[in-house]
View 1 (tube, rainbow, N blue to C red):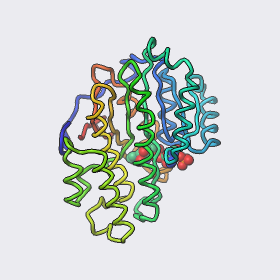
View 2: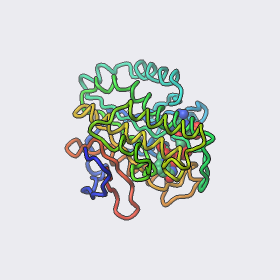
View 3: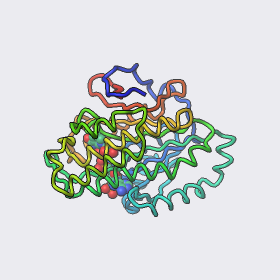
Length: 310
Ligand SMILES: NC(=O)c1ccc[n+]([C@@H]2O[C@H](COP(=O)([O-])OP(=O)(O)OC[C@H]3O[C@@H](n4cnc5c(N)ncnc54)[C@H](OP(=O)(O)O)[C@@H]3O)[C@@H](O)[C@H]2O)c1
């Protein structure tokens, strides 16, 4: 994997509708899928014929999303399960549900090449556009970084039983790329991609939370926009690299920044719709096996499709 971020242009990503190679035995799990990009991703995968697990932290919102899919005629291959990624009990219940709900899972794994795709999409930000309060920094880090990490850890044993290469796509943000970090000590830790490990990422996150608790975060060189959110994505990007390195050949792990997208997180402002962002995310998630990458950071570009940044 490359060390520092670069803006090297990648070949265009094949259109997932023209290079269909998956089947209904390809299962995509989408977190935070009751609205926004997550919901749009579920629609996209359902249209493309995958089996989809729509998850939401709030059961009633998840069931409402299922009703909307029904109206669109897209609910046939979609199952719902409640999942709050910031709650370990909820993660554990999800894993049990998944194992029992897909009761022929073992057979599917060994004979039908069931592939598992995890779309870590769920995230929070409590700041409106232009604001930068750290009042909820703990919750932001706990959800966006630790939530995605703990859910990944809980799912990895299932991934490793899958007959074909499983995939994780972390919906991240370019607000969390290394160039936004001016703290030289922290940058040196996260920038050494060959030796970076989970303990070091945790150390960086803890230093940030300590800086917030002790009121010195503004002067400490952390990213300047939506600082807590950006640090959570910085950590998620770094963790994705560590995972990609650790599971090379077994699990493909990439990040995707959807760009400025019209969702609740941006008060409906943005350069494109959640459906547009989901189409780009799905194209990366469904790269044909011969084009499959790992350890990459894809960023949506309004002008030229996709650019691989890390
Ligand atoms: N929109 C953008 O411009 C933009 C840009 C860059 C990156 N992104 C990333 O894109 C992804 C999707 O964001 P979005 O724009 O679609 O935002 P959104 O509309 O606010 O959706 C966020 C989703 O995450 C869910 N969520 C929050 N906390 C959760 C938890 N603890 N457990 C499970 N689900 C939880 C929310 O559920 P509730 O409805 O219950 O709150 C909601 O379904 C995020 O990772 C975000 O960081 C967005």
